[in-house]
Image (tube, rainbow over all chains, first blue to last red; front, side, top):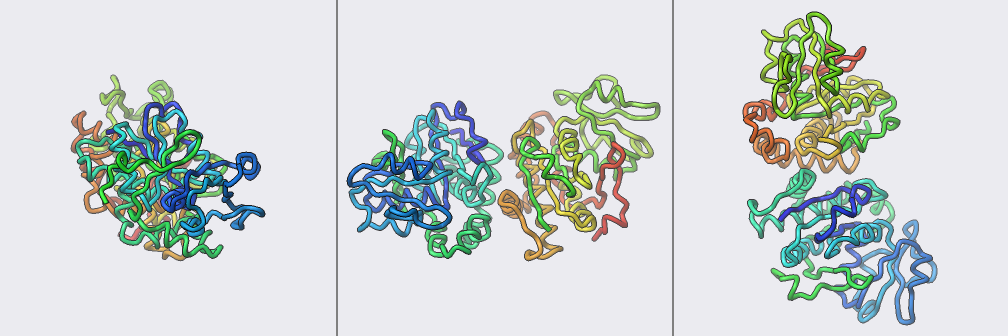
Length: 246
Length: 246
């Protein structure tokens, strides 16, 4: 399997994603939130870039999620913290979620055969799903406004390590950026929380009082659910396909 | 000190380098060769991008270095292997060296206050020189045709680690890409040769019979010479300025 890690959305070329599986990674916090909400029984997530688009898409019974400047948007049901998306709050619901980088990552990947959402939370499950889908795989670090974000790189490294562990080193061909991310993950895997706090986004979240979010988003391989893009929304990949190792 | 690592030349913005010290890194092999040649008594290196420019620049007494398709250029004195640039061959000479990515890295850095050449060979000395020059520092990984090369990232990580060790963690502010490179270096620092061989460029060099070059280029901190850009050529930074720790 060819595996390529791309540093940020600006660097991704749509044509290079043709016929591939793309795993979009936005650890702080879009993909962590999407995974948590779906794992808690949410029916589907519709990621949109702007508040206006969220309001256009919302239908009766839907919930709205998102924030601007670290505050919940007036009239919305949730902010961007995965901790808000509890089973009680989301079960059976469809959620329209505003995320800038996560949504752009998905839009950029439209030529891919499959688009998955990855985070540290479901890294191993993402790797297993990518193997089951039998395509060359691109791990697209969302980053922040076309700049690389370390937490996404660490997560790419985790997914790569899981892919390599299952497939065997000889059966994967990894680009140089991926090799660097794997090394970087292996160096910090025993202190993921401290590593997340050292990143630009982690520092900002820490200052804004989102300490508990960082604790949750830094946990690796605690969920076996893998969101997949289907009919313009993110739903859960059927477990039979995800070939869970849990 | 602010320290930024840039993944490849295409990502560098000239204006962001204004008033800074830029360390250009092209481990395989431009900067490793420049350091080795100057350490062996070569008077100056003039890096140029094309064979035609090399022939335009050459003056009586100069030597010519460079290769195309892993072969020495007809009429040239050296290829691109640092092992060829021995004391006997280079002492007191000026060398015109064709390198694609290394030269572009230097050209891109013209707005900087200082341009140094870094490789694993002189990583610690580069860090000491950057501290002595008292400017915010950018480590510019040359990469290969605007794609990140892992060996340059590993070297950026080494220089960062040396900077952090000397200045103290609290006195440096490192961008996310730099944090990732430092982690990646720390993970592989005890097996730098194996790491270089695993990179795209390392594999290619290995197949082309440059095994001994890889052995040399993978050695860290064995030279205390730091090339600096002055009057359109690379010369050695005076040792008093480099504040060597050797």
